[in-house]
Length: 126
Image (cartoon, rainbow, N blue to C red):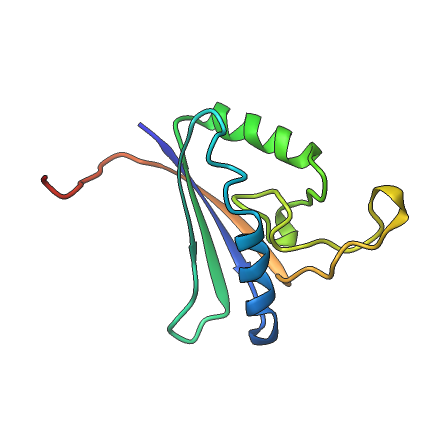
């Protein structure tokens, strides 16, 4: 069965729009990755300041390969920077990048990566 990676991003109210715009700008960047199955960016609605970035993968190996590739890409930053799954640049990053240009301020102030195995699933009957 598949594995799920959830990146819980702590985002202040004033950075929510920034985070969402950064993810929108990266739309399509993971869909063609080998083993990728699903992505969702979940906006909090009940008083919490945590966005959830939900990705589903065929295997841990596929996720690890994608991480290795995405971390080498332009503008790629670590999990603490609010990237897709656990990497990428959607949340932005701090500090100098290649060429000496400053990277944007991170949209997320904290991040935690959660990992799960899918052991049961149900889909609507067609």
